[in-house]
Length: 228
Image (cartoon, rainbow, N blue to C red):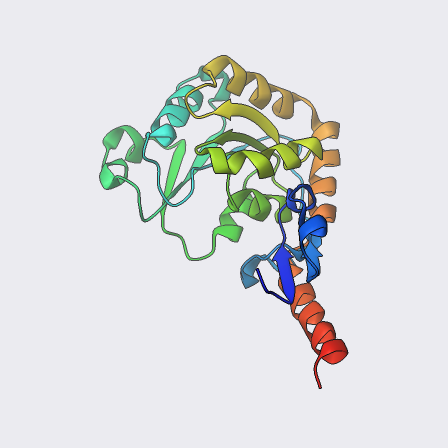
């Protein structure tokens, strides 16, 4: 395309071949990751000794009802009886989940219907189980170790790039992973405190939530060098 500046703030940006096909200024990689203002200047999070809260999020929608499956796998296993699951209910969800006593009456489940500041919920949680998408970068800023499944093929490139950097643990596409895989990863992070600390620090170092500011600065610098 006849462009002057190309911005791609994903982990897969350097695998796209832009350098071979573009003469544009390239703002690539995690330091240019574009997140909402609520994720800027989060700061290093406080780390609890024990895993007590797990976030479950599949994005804006959940067409295959993975949220219900995840809740049943975690909440109804007695070894996780001291853990609370925090569930983000997007605007594209089947709203039956908000009125199902199986979930609303369980004190180990907290449902959030289109929350205004998801960062506050993320910062409460020690681990997350999430579908691939921009949410993974938001979780990284908040320092939340995340177990990831893919809902769509177009999520695979950046999931693979994040896994290469050892920022997430990928368990497969939504119809491929099984309960044993999920619980194996949960059990690892629950029982390995030092590894959890190390990953949290790495996540918050690689993505700091200030990508928008760097993009603005990059555009301003390009204008000064090329216009007028």
